[in-house]
Image (tube, rainbow, N blue to C red; front, side, top):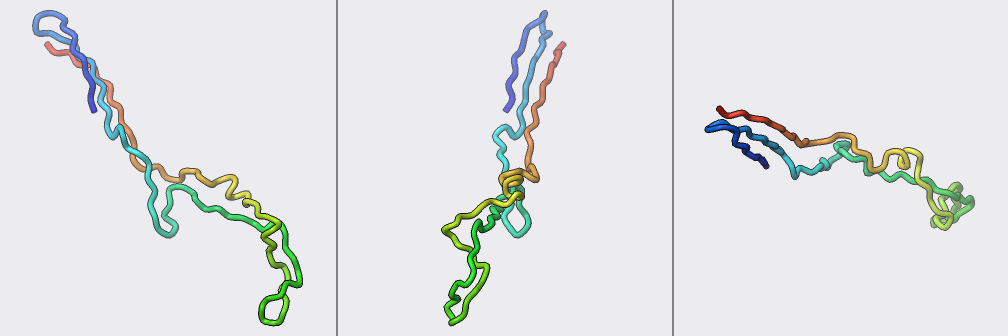
Length: 102
């Protein structure tokens, strides 16, 4: 998109001010695939409470099983990096021009 304004000076002489916008409506996008993300969308959690001596359904017991009633917490990596943009694709270019026609 380009906007311009002409100003008459004298006879056929004129001054033109022009502003050109390239890719003005360009938006960021992400690439899908394994390890090919531009935005960090990984949510890692840790279990707040673990319990021992939980029946495993096969007649035995398991220790260190996560108790979901205790809730979950986000890892420090998730808190620091979730939603951050790693790679920016596309860009906008603004061109400002002054032309003198004689």
